[in-house]
Image (cartoon, rainbow, N blue to C red; front, side, top):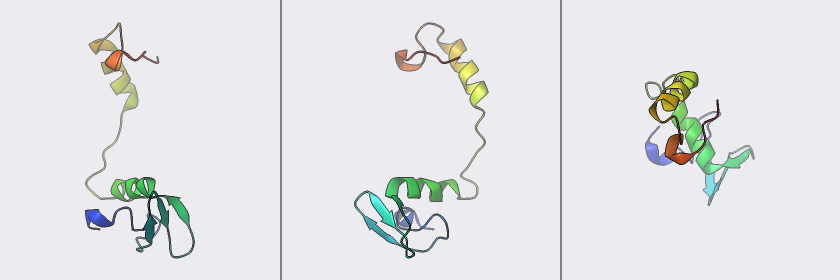
Length: 77
């Protein structure tokens, strides 16, 4: 799917629908946020997704800044 169509294509079946501002509407009346719909399409691209290891990321952040967290936000442990 070409990148310009990520928010115009239904993430459930790839069929082009209508985007109206922040909303996407599928041909069957399904409606959702257009940006969320685009993110679901991008997440389905083979080769672009990777596993997330959140526990390892939190541990790495804790070691990097033990006082203030990331951007001075508190760490959730």
